[in-house]
Amino acid sequence: MALDDPLEVTASLRIPAHELAWRATASGGPGGQHANTANTRVEVVFDVVASEVLSDWQRQRLLERLGDTVRVVASDERSQARNRALARERLAARLAAALRTGRRRVATRPRRGAVEARLESKRHTAQRKRLRSERPRAGDD
Image (cartoon, rainbow, N blue to C red; front, side, top):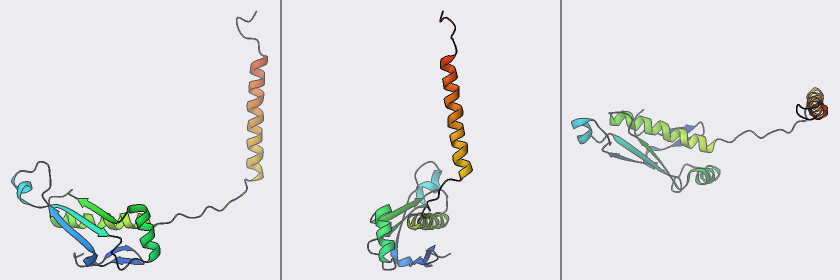
C-alpha cells in the first residue's frame, strides 16, 4: 500500500491520495537520539468540504458527525512508514464508522407467552407484597 494509492473507505468510496494532507513531526516522549532526530509522528488531514469524490449525502453525513476536517494522528511506532500506514487505517475506519447507518427497527408485538409470563410475574410480586403487609412483625404487640 503506497502513499499515492487511493484510500478505500467503503466499497463505494475511495479517496484519492491528493485529497489527503500529510505532516510528519517529532514524536514526543523518551527514545534517545533516534526520537530527537526522526520525524516519526504522522498526522493526516482530510478536508470534507473540499473533497471532490464525496456524494452530497456522504458529505452531509461526515459534516454532521465529524466536522469540516477529519484529522488522525499516529505515533505508536518508531517508523514513519508504519505510522503512515496506521494513520491511513484509522482514517478509513473513522470515515467508514461515520458513514455507517444503523438498521431501522421493525416494530413487533410481544408474543402471547411473553405477555402472560410478564403478567404472572407481576401477580406473583403483588401477592408477595400483600402477604408481607398481613404478617405480624416482631415487636408489634
